[in-house]
Picture 1 (cartoon, one colour):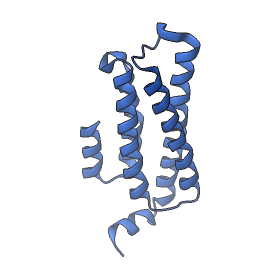
Picture 2 (spheres, one colour):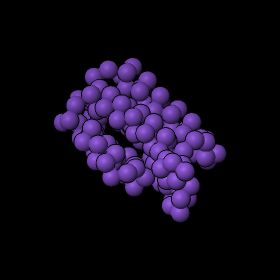
Picture 3 (cartoon, one colour):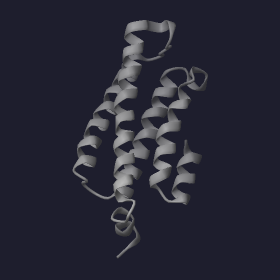
Picture 4 (cartoon, helix red, strand yellow):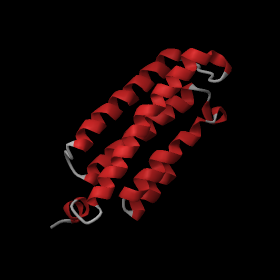
Length: 135
């Protein structure tokens, strides 16, 4: 049995799937809250340079979260595969949101903490450190 299959069917398999499920909840909440904050409070709390890119990224991130919920509930694929795909989309979407909202000064860089921290429980040490370095 190879390491990937061994890791996804081992004793921590249920815990790994639960971590992925909780991270999907986070992924669904973040874009909804950001768009709500932007439209309800306006530019007083969240400065957005390009509203179209902001909304498109938030909607795309939300759609990815919903698709991930469905795939994780059905346990389609392996845990490492889901982890890598989710980490890639998280880094891309959050970086795009961060740049559209004014860069590091906006404070949205803190949104990286939950996905990176959560996925570090599921990934191997070397992959988790690489993910943290990318973020």
